[in-house]
Image (tube, rainbow, N blue to C red; front, side, top):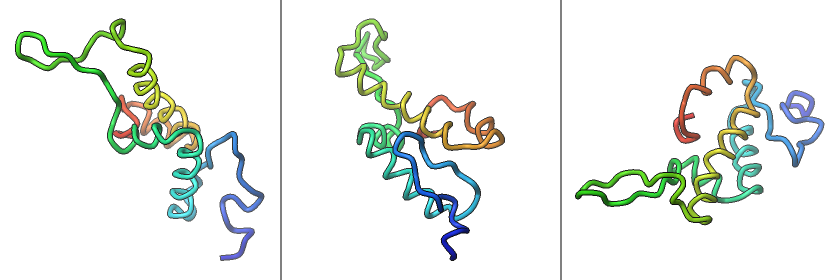
Length: 109
């Protein structure tokens, strides 16, 4: 493939995720993985494994702990899913954005 036909022929930004242009998905996927991991490996983990929501045992049932009771480290882990949402939606055009914006986690996207 000629260099001019690549979706990122002019170079990639370290501040913005690569825009998905429906051309050369395998190349875009690798670039997205590299971009995400460059920010924090926890973001990639949130995409693969889903959001981190602290749980607690109440009356023999495991339930989500209220946000106000989360520790700083638990809050940081949960924030990774929010970061992933932002990265994924920033990498999509308007059509694709509306398709995935309805999902509640980056893993679902």
